[in-house]
Image (cartoon, rainbow, N blue to C red; front, side, top):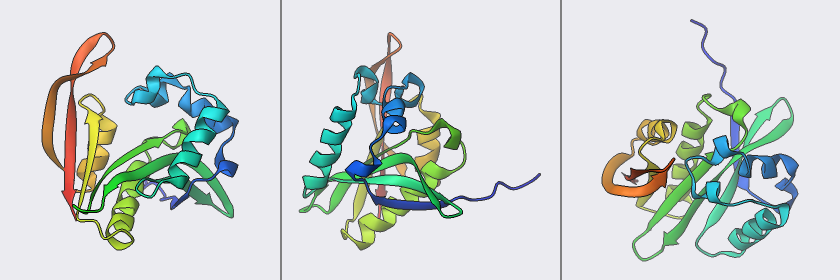
Length: 175
């Protein structure tokens, strides 16, 4: 069996130059957002720009673009957020999305979480990370387990999904 070639992944602070029609399409793509609270919103470029501005001004939330370097081109394929950071407890939440469906099932989510864990530990000196996901988001569960996150909580019937109540699972990692 032929092994998939690993793409070169870079996390960098998202800025307004990264906001474009392709990004807008992700955020309005029901398949991309089906496991997020973004699925309830109709996004505009202005909404996205305001979100990026807000995160860039924040002292405790940090939004990174997930970029794949192919040859000399950087392709924005998703986002990952660290925060809010609790500086007293040295803990934070993470959330992520691979918006470009052409890059699904390639290990990019796993690699992006691995990279944000390193940033959380080295740059921010954090000791604990948590991430929540819908119980039917098998891709996200795999990403978290691949990064040694352990299930810490299950919020029973927390989420309304396709007219049914489902559980929210919270995973944690001591770093």
